[in-house]
Length: 262
Image (tube, rainbow, N blue to C red):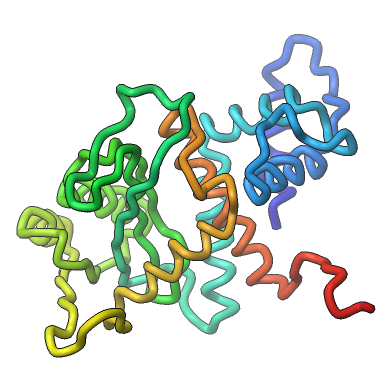
């Protein structure tokens, strides 16, 4: 599912190269190395030696990040996963949520901020999913940016990629600005309130889907904290986590484990 996109990218790059000499590294090994960094959270230079060198792996990662390859793969796999689930490839409804996370010491101060509500200094991730939790759009900003600004960005990106979207559910952190912007795009934005009669944690209609998706990506240790110097790298890491989950969802394969074999 992934190989045709990467092979086409490499061929286009070779066609632009004066010598046209084929690259020696295996694309599958490179992609496995990127998945390994994303899942384990290790620094690039600590990649095990059975992968390509960390410089080579990062070179491909940066190129695919900058040229939108990860975003394209996520788009393609979402369509396949929806079809396998018995749905149409193009979604018509979505759910939006944000998550503020702390950053590591290498992240530039200029790309950080303070989320006053959650009292977190770092970055804010905004994600938009379909009604089964598959990632449709993502943005990464300073944590100080308002929910409204993040929601508007997500609606714009989702509508551009999926013109069929006509409904979106959000929490009470999103105000009239998002509702009005959604209306201008032809998207009915509905605020879902918590049940005031229930104390503590409880499942909130529609919102639980996107909150579960945030839990899915947080299983990838590279996303437990924002380690990326560039916001675009943070966004790419979220797409990679989504690609990893989608590939397993479509094929029914899981990571091999020794548990239960003894």
